[in-house]
Length: 145
Image 1 (cartoon, rainbow, N blue to C red):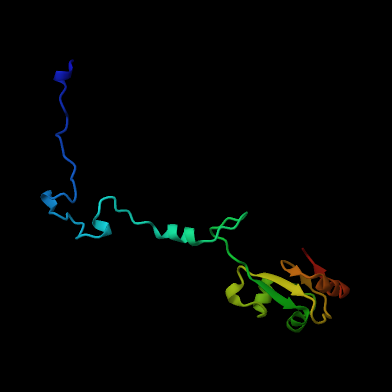
Image 2 (cartoon, rainbow, N blue to C red):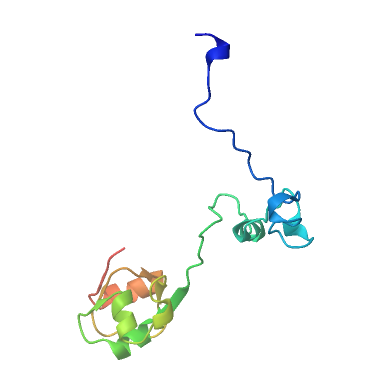
């Protein structure tokens, strides 16, 4: 077999050249003038602008970072709402109306030592200040870290 014996399987087919006259008209579906009618038109995706506007803080992943809200609950509020030897966690605080429902998922709850407590309770899944921890343990309560 020699080069002059080789034959093509498929017919030659020209690619459509858009925007140069021809079968699709002078504008060829691109409209008239403007950025989108030009060659090399590529609109930047909106997500790029969001990434550029987001502050990049050192040592943190800048995308998807969410500020968590810290809710403060005092011992006197717990004294009013809870009976003796109850488990106190974010879910029970939500059920008793001490945390707003809208923020319950990402909430960090901190128990502070304002007021007095007279009943022993078990604290789980919440942060407790040193003063509050003293008062809770004095009444026979338990604080799980």
